[in-house]
Length: 222
Image (cartoon, rainbow, N blue to C red; front, side, top):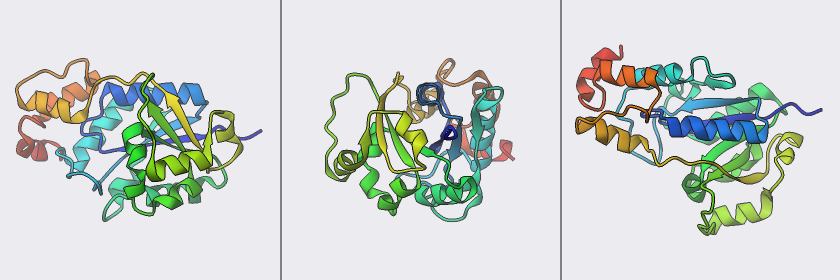
């Protein structure tokens, strides 16, 4: 019998919020994933650097996942110098897990932008791609992403366990209208992000004054 796949969920997590956790939970349950590894990005190639420093983002993520079965933090991108390319992350994971199935978990917008990623053609050779989308969304998937879906698409979660990599699966999830950038803006404006982030993350945001006063947070995160 094939081993259950491992999910890989990358992002800056600046901060991690309940939308991230809900998406990961639904995909882990629906696809029979053994675990979901949250991989915080050190230096994102396609967006500005994170506001919160690495140490604080790691603390927030660890606090958010504490006590949640099947969720774990993987800090390899924080330890790796240079830009945080997902193809490098998947390559290092592949060396560790051998022929076990890996599933890269992406939102629909990220999947549409996949052809702009570094060595993106190598990614399906290293992992399956699971695209989380809001139910009822009919956004056209065209260009390189559309060609990849046409060539490698599947509707069967079982296909993800039967091979180490190579398939693309679309999966509807409950996507909450929450974003890290909106949370940062809310806090910067004096608002309260309660119920948008886990309580442990809320506590760290309040104690460090991150997003309200990033410079002060640099000292608090040490």
